[in-house]
Image (cartoon, one colour):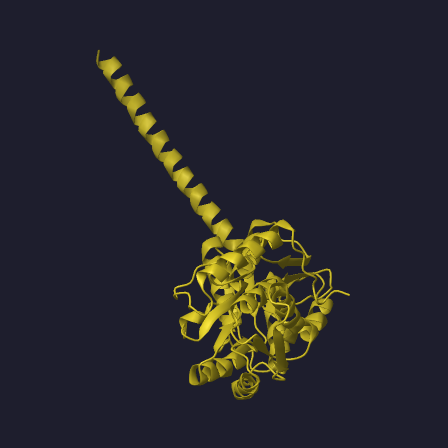
Length: 344
């Protein structure tokens, strides 16, 4: 009986020791796995051609970038540039620091990116809001003309003077996505409306933008859309002082002054940056050109594609919004086709 008891105790002891060894082994494997995953964390840099400042385009883009970095465990860094020379230096520094993916944005970055990407063909790059045709670059564009069409259609339904305008940044193909998209949408709902468009000549001149908005007001426009980047602040200021109606771009600007800023074209730079990081970390990232429109929720219009924290202004009215929602559905379904102004 003593021998039996000793045998039982021995077996219990062996079982306990084996279990302890197994747990330690599992902990070692888990620890080793964690270290390995940490070692493989993707390094991704967002190198911007200017300081983030008050431009909502870059603010929103940086927010999406940081959100994706946190959610997908990427080692991320945002680098702002003070001028074009600094931007190229920052791109080269990101390459030297061995970032796995380098993301940038806008036509301002094109020349420097072409040079740096061509010199580093094994390095992955992505650029938002323009196209650079190199095999190691992913170019991410937007079909802004779809959202501009909706804005123009809404303006055509809402104007009381039958005269509307737009203050745009510069007369370049990219901006025609806004001006020509708006013009086509306006004609679709109000073919007799008069459309004024003036160009600021830059992206950071609120004083000039305000001056041009006042010129259009003097011609009888009761709705003047802003499409001048930070220049829109001048249009907003004029609208508040003189009592006309306006709209913003990129993010919901109605929250600033819903009495006068009654609509906003939405451009989801946060979504596209988030998706780019996600796909790169998950191994589904592809080079070449991609674009986002109404169907992909890459662009939109407040109250039509997305609700706002603001209350809809009576100048626009729910009846008109409902009509434009139908237009939006037809664009997504392909019933209404809108030509890309940048295509021949």
